[in-house]
Length: 30
Image (cartoon, rainbow, N blue to C red):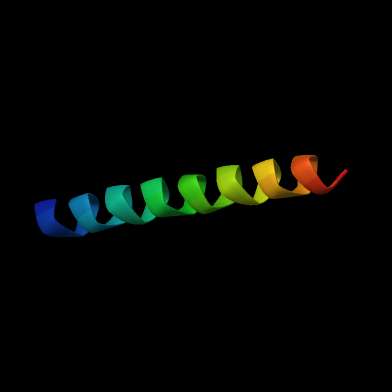
């Protein structure tokens, strides 16, 4: 149970990081 929550938490961090870098790239290109 705890392991699943931790995994989901890490997955969320990765998702946010990817989203942030994608936003940065699109801002740089525009």
